[in-house]
Image (tube, rainbow, N blue to C red; front, side, top):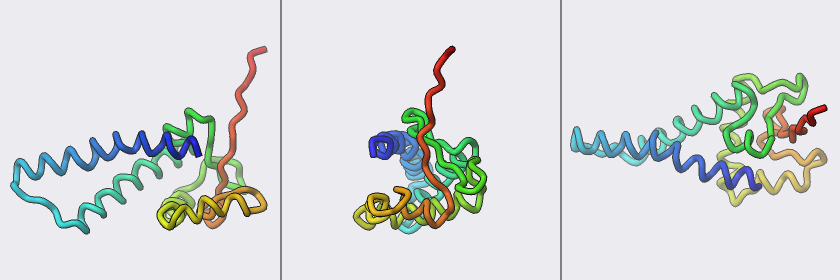
Length: 133
């Protein structure tokens, strides 16, 4: 949960540079404001790009790196493939938006997995810190 809170703070920066700044520049240059549905689509695509690129690269977002968490494929134990990332991202929205129902699911799941992880065949693991010998 601490990683989720930290992630939300980092997303403020992502949204600031990737959403608000272009929106302001377009408004100033073209004197046009996109319709609300287009703004929501922009946010969904921007956040999807952020999460999917980082999950595919090494299974970690910036906040997950800080908290030593990683998303892995439950079968191969490697970072998830593109299909798994797309499913996980799409299902994370309702999981988080509906009063955190998908997050609460983890308390009742036999493996303590989130609902979107269960359906995408991924899981979040804690990386052990290697000790110098």
